[in-house]
Amino acid sequence: MFRTLISTLFFLLTNHYTHSQSIDSINLKDQTSQIISKNREMEAAFAANDMMKVASFYSDSCLLIGENVLIKGREKTNAYWISLKDRGISWRLENIKIDACDSLAVQQGISKLVYMFQGREQLSVVRFTLVWKRVNGEWLIEVDHYSTI
Image (cartoon, rainbow, N blue to C red):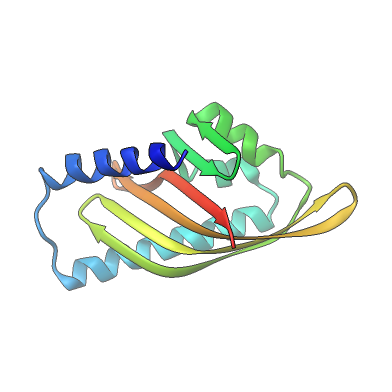
């Protein structure tokens, strides 16, 4: 799975950078703010139990990669998030770093998600790397890689 992530990142970055120009620090700050705003919107959708809204932050061709998890595409991503419907308690995305250039950004952070499983409250704390891609002016998650801390 890690090899798939690296291959995908390499493809996205090399394909993107061959057509991109450098950006100034003001533009990078704006892109970072936009992505942090998307994080807050995802948390709000989760808190509202709107898991389809959470899934909508992912591209149609997205990959979710975790320990023993490989999810590809819109249909399976929707199902992944819908499986948490009525089970989610809270979710917080803590940003560590965002590197962005034009229509591509890589975000690293910590996710703390509390949910119900078999009648008990569970806490999932993972380190994540998200590859965001701007499509028609909107940031969408192309790759979501996470691993337990």
